[in-house]
Image 1 (cartoon, rainbow, N blue to C red):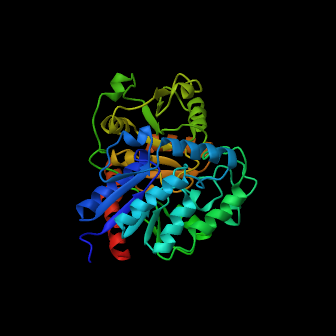
Image 2: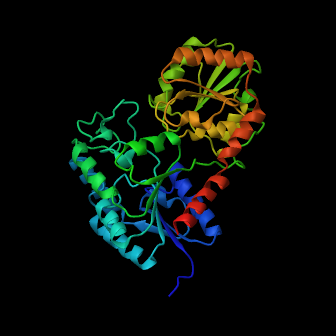
Image 3: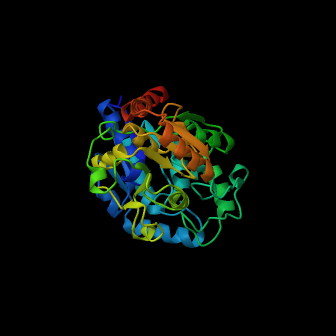
Length: 406
């Protein structure tokens, strides 16, 4: 008997944040195209705050907390939640999905060998959007900052096994072997990466057997666009000062907080004003008084007003898959200066921004002075570039991929 409509099951660790938003937006676009879409994720307070249509909860808080605890003490991430996963797979069997679309599988909420054994046994086509490098390492989602290349042949002696996903023992050698066994051998799986940089890493990893597509993350151009405001006046910034803006929601060395601190010492304070968004009380303790610290914005419109008020968006990130904040700034008509690391430079072209070598603070300082004096970039060109990342176009690429697979 022919099914009435095609069914897509998405699985992700969360409903919020960038990956949760991407999952929800893909679901909305696919539903509008006539697909029956289910969004599956673990039970947590944060996940349940956002209403998701056709949602399936994987496990409960007890099984999730137990999985997190066992993973921390044993180093085996994704090896528990047996009962929760068995219950979820029974629901999956009733749905009979035409495609399973995977997102983030880390953070201890599903039994990975059980999930992939099910996929292989039933030969279900899979799309897997890789939002970081976790899928082909023994544990870590990023390794650029550590300058580690062990993932190319087999992880061991991990320098950051105590970081996310945290563990008290180094099981990276075993987990690398497990993941290579679990994740390879799927008959019909297409990998999607947000950047060419990540796609290139996949081609060097044990996942190289799969076709890899690059589909950039998209943004809502209705939410991010040039908006006039009294931001300067409200914060005592004179018209003559050149605003350098940084935005992150997890400031630290990885996002270049130390670079902004160093720039605040070097730049002419009367000429430049550094504004950082996404800070907190702990970050404030490290910042000089000359830096304007904004802990959070109330909504996207307020954030867009700050982007629009800035003269240059500075992104000294050291680990980045694509750099959505770059694109948000461009959509508000603000040019970008970033480090040459990860996929961050891919959001720019010669008309809307500049790139300097990672950790070259001297070059970044010189480029700031050059841009402030020569003003080589125009808001119109930034807006043109931002249109390449219109979320509607990007999510249409996922719909086209679904059609090709089916």
